[in-house]
Image 1 (cartoon, rainbow, N blue to C red):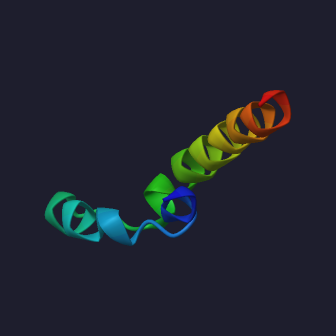
Image 2: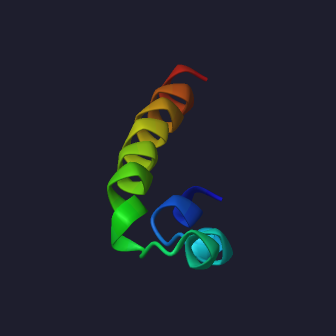
Image 3: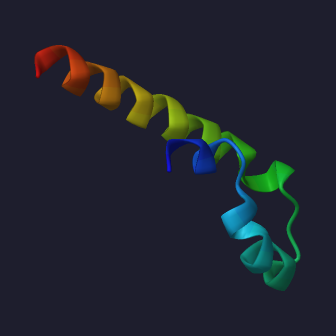
Length: 47
């Protein structure tokens, strides 16, 4: 599930309806990917 943020194929129908492109949301997806990656790594190191 983590890589779905890097390759947002899940968002294609919503983008088509809204008339947006993938470039319009990639910044948000990469930010969420990095943020969740940091939390994931911290969780792995603590447990």
